[in-house]
Length: 224
Image (cartoon, rainbow, N blue to C red; front, side, top):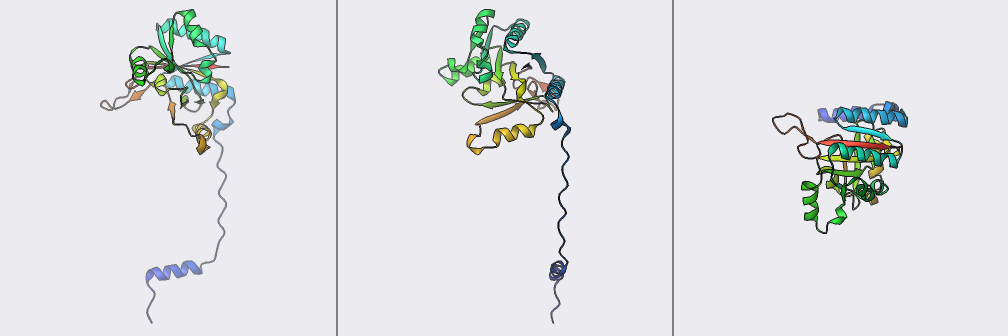
């Protein structure tokens, strides 16, 4: 009689072994960030972004946000800026603000051709002003959904990026933001980016350098 192979012997033992129920998976403890209050999230966001050399201001309402923008424009010598037309920025009526403070306000819609828009955003304007769809407290990160009202280059091309962020858009962790953006395949955005402070690269001899491929400075105005 032919003896079973080692493989067959092992399989027979496995089949003959008594069945045991699988132990339930233990509960995963909640991240401490998920228990943060809104004020704690704002504090964590500010702390983390400042660590990345970003700048954060907190104002109570849109009127104060416009006044803070005026302070920034004076300090940075801004005379020409590109702004998105997302809901946050649209509510500020920046064209009227620009006339008051002698700042030329342009939007991507002012340019009939993509080439002329690219030339302006790279070579003419001194800053880009956008809203933000999300802010992530755990890392001081902005989340921007890009569409016809939020052109990607407005936040990425100028040397200064100013983001206006309502405090109710603060989220504790990345996963919450990703779930909200991609929970419905029918509404996936064409582009979505996370921004944590000024642009940075380590391509040059492995030395970290900020501002190589994008904004050298990021300023966030938290509203609310």
